[in-house]
Length: 92
Image 1 (cartoon, helix red, strand yellow):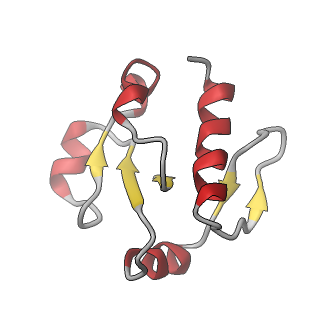
Image 2 (spheres, rainbow, N blue to C red):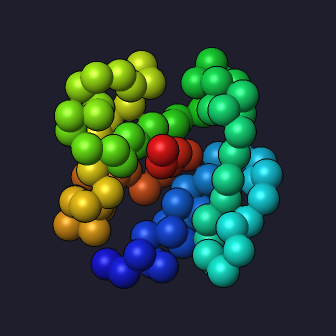
Image 3 (tube, one colour):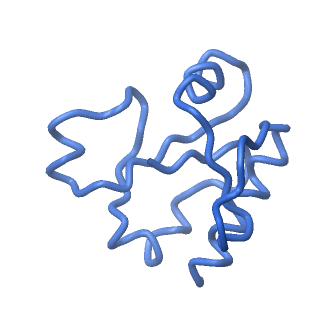
């Protein structure tokens, strides 16, 4: 899967749950940036949300957001099938 298609899936997932989109990244169709406060709010809502930590495994072990799963950026294209297509997906 190409990066562009994956980014479109992230947008599609966010639209399924009605997530507000704060801003679109320049030149990146289907990518939206949301504030940390939005993530906290989504965590306490009944909406299904998956937080994906794209840092290295070592960085993930040091500190992470509670409930986040680690899929390092270098492995994301190979492992994208592990990410559910329903609900909101937040990459950080």
